[in-house]
Length: 313
Image (cartoon, rainbow, N blue to C red):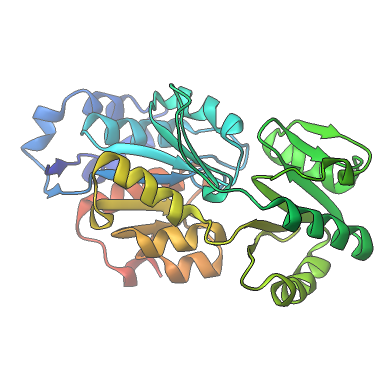
């Protein structure tokens, strides 16, 4: 159905209002705003978490929450897509009142937030997981082993604490990850300093080519997922679940793990602070400003209908 969106033309007033009261008023008055603004036909909106929905403080700003609220009021389906575990995403979905599938662990798992129904899952094969563990034991660095129940580490160190503090991720220390032999993890993250991570990516691609997906998602993080797993694969599952075509999907993100999702969706918008690679893959770029409200600015300009790629690049 056609979607009318009120935010863009009033965005200046909204940003000047400490309580964002004007935006909230618009959200509950779609009949009033439908007389004033052009229509779009998106039916499903995919939103990344860290760096997109969440600000530097790992919280949802009032601006972003209000903007997502308007999407919902106008009848769009909203799905969160993240590299985080499903359990780590639930509180944000609940905060926004989202009820439906969540795309977690870079697309390895698509699971309904309310019913627990698993729509899709594809994890790393046990033999490949064991190979990564042995590889890391030989070469050095620290692994995060994402099982369905928790994230396991051999021992805590500076890098594991950096990861835990960035996303408030609880970790389970097990002494030796070889004890998890036979398990099929959702993903494995190899932590190291940025220089080592960059150098390791090239070597690892040769070793695991055609067997695993590899991606640097942060200067210290080299992530491994099953072959063919990415956010686009998860988003395709959700779109089919709702009976929606890719051309009717709008995606928001900021990182290298959003690139495949950007390419799959009908339209994509990178945050103003996105990585160069994500910026290059996106249809549009959000206007500059504070990272905590980049999503709200992106939503405003997307539905204004007057944006062009040149404006944002």
